[in-house]
Image 1: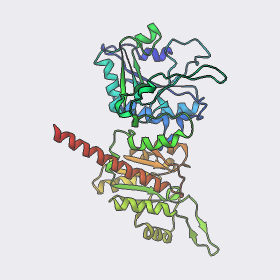
Image 2: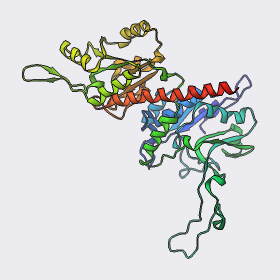
Image 3: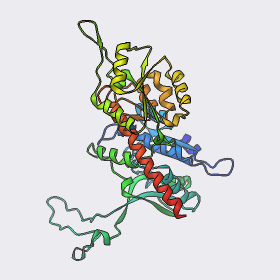
Image 4: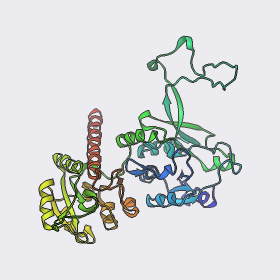
Length: 408
């Protein structure tokens, strides 16, 4: 532990403990290179962890330990403070029990309530260390090395009396999502797990290992359904702004032999717009004074999509805030899709925001969702599906809330 990090963990002047979160994010992952900043469901992997930690409100500081410049940039863009990674276990002698899997290995849903509940096991119940587990129903057998005459034997079952899954409680296994401990336990005993130990059980749907590429699509589907998307309530989106050039189109204007200007629009994207409109989400397309679309093209575009088209200046926010006010909406009710530096303020402000996969870094860092698809090739459709998925998720949460209230 560096002196800078250690100082942040000392008891505060007001007598309360300083609760610091530390995310381990090295750049040398062998299974998936730079896994920590690879986009998972539109958000860098480390972004899911940092967002939950920061929004939980239970940490006085949130740190990222890394040895890679790009990871440092992404971590800072998501609000984390950065400290230099300490050498690995094979390079130097490390305290017993500190060579743990870092939280990013299983990040599907370290959501705010889970972070709070797990930490309160230390702050309120007086435990010294708490870690997350998931219940597995798997029969384990002893490994037999190739060429060995030894026979295998079961570790956790009696083959003559094999239980049915529903008759067996299973076993609790660490899932690497959360490790909470006291500074004293680390400094005095070199342990993350010791003293009065407790575990925090997470449901299987909130836990998935990401070790190789084949795990990634499974994790994406899981996080889209169960993940924590922030404190705002984007599920109430009523209005979407979308930049035409570079989002709805690929950003190119074609000229015919006769001099007529043309743009290419993907039918998947227009279907995505109609999907939103059918759910009562107004879609407004934006053209830029810096990249004007001819009046003829604007008319055709409006007719094709059924959208109002507005021209914005160098700072789109100047025109768009008037539209939001006229519709008596708040920015949390707005979705915004842009693709460049000029869109940063709107991307930051909107309840849901996205950029195509080929957007520049400055726009990606400001957006809440990064599409896999590039501009003009299905990115708008992908974002539309993301918006509608969040609406469905909100409906389920609201339904559960009403059930809970009626039962009280």
